[in-house]
Length: 350
Image 1 (cartoon, helix red, strand yellow):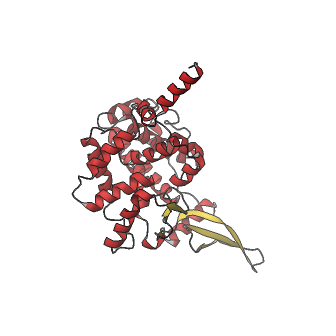
Image 2 (cartoon, helix red, strand yellow; image 1 turned 90 degrees about the vertical axis):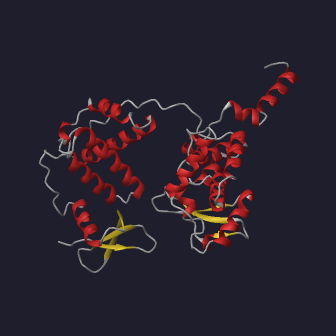
Image 3 (cartoon, rainbow, N blue to C red; image 1 turned 45 degrees about the vertical axis):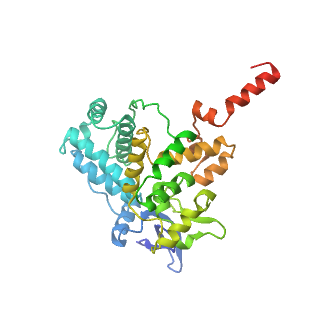
């Protein structure tokens, strides 16, 4: 029997495989195997043989515990080539499940009635959005077993999501000025400039820190950013706003690294922005709120949703539309109410 051949194409994040033709004179290329190239070749080949049903799966006895579920889920998400942050989220969600039900609790005995028990336990130390996120990861973990017919039902198939607090997800124009004034009080100049980069570009946390020096072109005011949400890690050209061109030049002059913006870890900058927002009375916001702020103000200025989608690196316009929220305070800042009053005075109709 001919066995598949595993190889890695140039600039590819996945393993590829091909078959020998029946005559053995040529090799037929196949689609990429969705396994990260960080996995050793021998391990990837074993997974490929199992996927193609050329190698029997490990027997499932029906008495598997939650500890086995965690190991199996982490193995599967690693095989799918998920990002480290995603794997970490699965691990945290399953750790919570093990903490509540017990490490030796059988997977087959997890019931839908346990959802309320889990929510009640998590709400002691977490907010509703975090609880909903944990339950979504548990739902996905059981779905993987359901797809392979290891289990016959998913206890998390349907669950009532907790109502998330209705608070603004972005900064209004007046709040932006308050935020920038507080940022100017930061003792470290590189932190001040880095926060401004996040606010005026709207990029994700890891995308700014991984920009390389050779991808910055100040002559054209552009820099190439890697989209961390894209599985193929495609890059896109980002126009550097006029307000932060001096900040970009400062990093190029004062940093000797190939990644000039990488002056701290992702966790440090998130905690720093969170602390600043808490000090000015906006504790419900966080670093990702700066991305919401950029998108909201761009849409309110009349920019095309398709253009904002490209700026933010979203996969679809429907995702960008979620970021288009504003409050009555924003309407006042943009003069929308005054414009409406003029139209009423001119026409005599509201």
